[in-house]
Image (cartoon, rainbow, N blue to C red; front, side, top):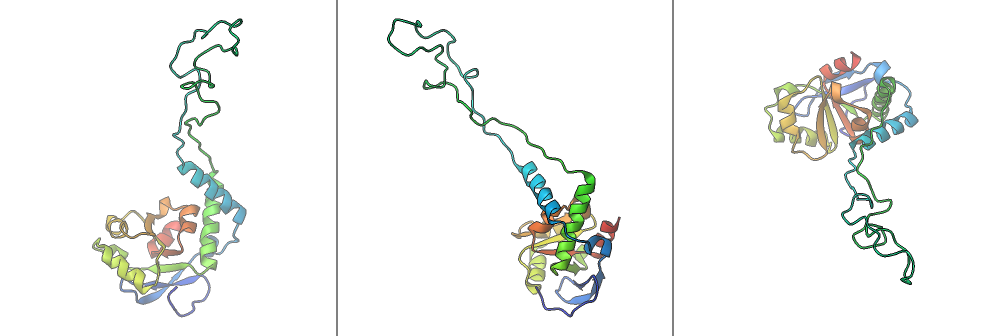
Length: 211
């Protein structure tokens, strides 16, 4: 974290694109100053990560593989074990028993719990002093080096930039920087916040969070 002067209350220092301090940003206590519910955060992360998984592995059972359904030889008198079908799992080319099946797993989290988890994540970041303000981001030309220089000034390698709305120039500037992402306020969630070490907020983004 960059060395800055201590600020009182729930205020964080604001930095310009050149990495210089340009005032402070007040954070609303009802969003950034609440008690952290670790159990709820754990549940929210599990729901998010599970919904990102894709289960595409699929094996065929004995009813799906190709092969005759006729009894391969008579039941008695051969001296061999009795079998009914060449598609049985015991034979090469037969069906698979208890193999993986393609499926879609979706977990849901009620809207009120999502909101509470988001507030807990933001409050945890505020308590850990892992939130910084950023100004002038709308003036970016879209070149990666502009954001790289800012992150180097702040000595930050893993950051999430939160804007009031989607800004294509910021997205272009950030997309080639590993460990750094940008999201508008309406798309942030507890997982994305906790995934990144530092949270960079614009003044407009904080206003959007209030709404």
